[in-house]
Structures are given as structure tokens and as C-alpha cells.
Amino acid sequence: NRSDSTFLQIGARDAASDLARADAELTNLRRTEGALESAGVFERITDFEAALGQLEGDPLDPSLRAAALESGWVAADSLQLASNALTDARQSVQVQAQAGVDAFNVEAIALAQINEAIFRALPGTAGYAALLDRRDATLSDMAEQSGIAVEYLPNGGVNVRMGDANGPVVVTGTAANALSGAIAADGTISFDLNGTSVVPVSGALSGYSSTLLTQRDLQSDLDGIAAQLISTVISAQTYGVDRNGAAGQPFFSGSTATDIGIALASGTGIATAPA
Image (cartoon, rainbow, N blue to C red):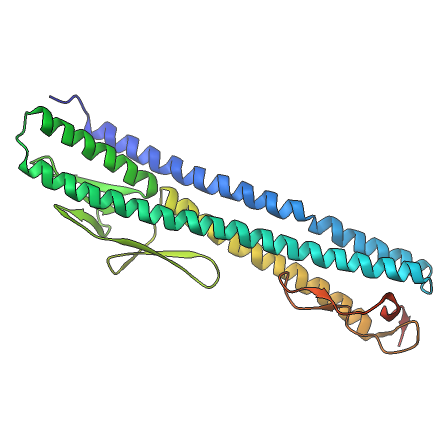
């Protein structure tokens, strides 16, 4: 005889799913935060602003012009570093998510095989009890990847649905349906179970999905900062002339944090006088 409680098992699985979701999200968001902070975008843009302020005090000084150009290059480089670091962090989460999908499928297949063995085993024997232990352990492993709803059958087997009792079927009897994950162009992930779109609400897969959504928004914010910097400085250049009286040319190239660069060949091209 096995000493167990269905209600305790359900509570334990739900708690494990919530913990796995929080751990996956928190761990990866901390890595993302560290990657962005290490690029020092705010400090480099502030330094660029300070260099332009110094140039304002003596617009004809070649060294101040060179320093302003160099500071602009460093600001652009910090934005690229931040964007690349964010891309690396996003790819890491995508790999973890795909690995989680694979692990979930492996456990689902294993559970279907355990069901088949349970159907053939003699209740009340040590082998039957061992199969039930394996069943419960496999259900726990599945719950860590995604929240599941379990239906206990009279013969000891289980049917499993993803999410709640109304979710799509993962395992029914001796058959298992495959879960798949697709990466969208914006880096987020969507899940499909045997042709049905699913959104995990708990488990590590849910944490990965939530993290990728946050990283997508962070990328958009970072690109917005780069676009604003590019637009502001190029606009100032457009309405001015450089040291030689020539019309101001674009200071930066590109349009996002990924491709921002320096367009000016030298500090002489910085427009410090009205057109």
C-alpha cells in the first residue's frame, strides 16, 4: 500500500509550477538587467552631452571638437553593446525555452508508457506501487515546465491536460501529444500543442515566455533612445554650419541601437554656428 494524498500532490505540483515560473523569470531578468547596466548607456550619453557643452565654450578648439566626436562614438558604441547584450540574453532564454519544450515532451511520452505499464500491472503488488511512484514523479517534472491538470483513472493511470481541466490534452491513456515552440520575428515565443495554440500560465515555460516579452519591450525602448539621440543631433547639424562654413552633415548613422554609428569623418564637421 502507498501512503499518499491526491490533494497534497495537486498542491505540491501547483506550488512547483509557480516556483519554476518565478525562478525562470527572475533569473533571466537579472541577467538581462546586468547586461544592460554593464553597457553604461546613460553614462555615455551624459558624457557626450558634457563634451558638447565644453565645445560650446570654445567652438573653434580642434581638441574639443575631436573629444566631442570621440564621446559621440563612445555613446553610439554603448548603445550597440547594450543591444548586442540584450540579443545574447534573449537567445539564451529562447534556448532554455526550447529545452523546456523538449523536456516536457520527453516526460509526456514517459508518462504514456507508464500508463501502459500500469494498465498491465496487478494492483496491490510492489511493481504496481513502484509504477504509481514513477507516475507521480513524472507528473511533478511535467508541472515544473508547465501547469497541468490531472485526471486520475480507476486503474491508476492518468490523463493530463495543459493548464486546467479545460485545456488541450497532453496525455490520454497510452498516447501523448507533442508540444512545440515557435520563435517570432520579435524574439517572443508561442506554443502549440497538437495544433492548438496554448499559453502556459505557470511553470518554467511561462517564465521564459514572460521574460521574452519583457526583453522585446526593452529592445523597443533601447531602439527608441537611439532613434531620439540620432534625430536630435542630426537635426541640430541640419540647422547649422561647421567650422569651415559648410552645411552641417549627419553626425550619426543608422536608426536603431543595433546599427547606430558615426557618420562624421572628423570633429571639423560638427556644426557649431547657425546656418
